[in-house]
Image 1 (tube, one colour):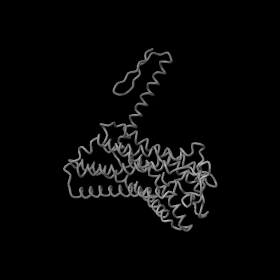
Image 2 (cartoon, rainbow, N blue to C red):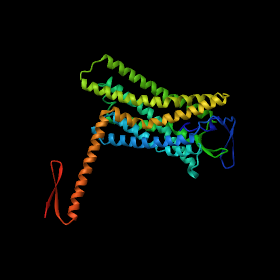
Image 3 (cartoon, rainbow, N blue to C red):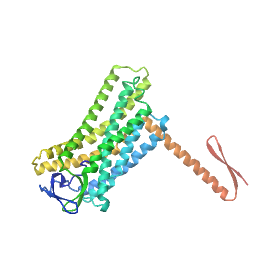
Image 4 (cartoon, one colour):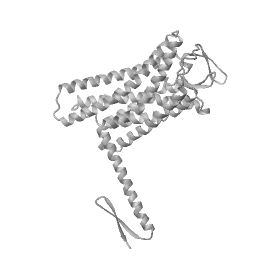
Length: 372
């Protein structure tokens, strides 16, 4: 990820030289030993593991519930929901690596494969970040087309077009995440190894600043424009079908809650990221207090951004009546099959005891006919 765990001194260090074995040595120019958050090596791993377990189970639950409906029975917006949950699911799988690193004070000790794990996990998180905002933007445009341009958007809201859009989002996110593969690496410091990004490159810093603006500010503006137009439209037009209008408003509220959760989670991170990049590009001479404010602010905002990956399942469950009905139906179906299997096993045990039984089913209930 771009700067998600750079709560070491690397943000305020210069690369001094490269040794014969190709490893980097850092020359820390500012010594502010009291600028780090206390006990971060304790609460960060705990928080990362909590996000991992809740995010993994929650997003897997969303994919199971929404995907069980099939292509014909589901809603068009469900395609974006599944892809959004899949992106979060892949992301949280990488969190145990960062939890272990955080428990070691931010150092990266994973043996010979450490550099590969550093690059791949950072790349996955970058792809998740981009795909999340792109899928949310697509969901906003879809709601705009469904409410404002319903009659003129049959092709754009077709299942084929939406699936093609999801493929385009994944491909573009993978391409935009390539800098994390190139500029993320394991570097050697005085106390160990750290998985950090090469902030010595002005090109990379400029690229990171541009990406922060284009992949967050621009999509948020598009989202605001879509929802602003939707609100105006709903206030000036009375629906001929009240039930259809109620469904649109309910779906609109669910998507809006997901977007608000994303913006609240990721806005602080992007703000601190832009501030840090600008200060690095301008070679600003920062005091220890300013450095501590930037570093700790980035760390806390990073944790807030991570929490977004386990928020969406809760939003679906508590706000989406359709999702809750589908989950209930799936649960009852599984329980019904379990009870039927239990009854069958129970009847089979009588057969093993020397009796002759036949199992018959009448009216959906399992009956045992026992003969001596």
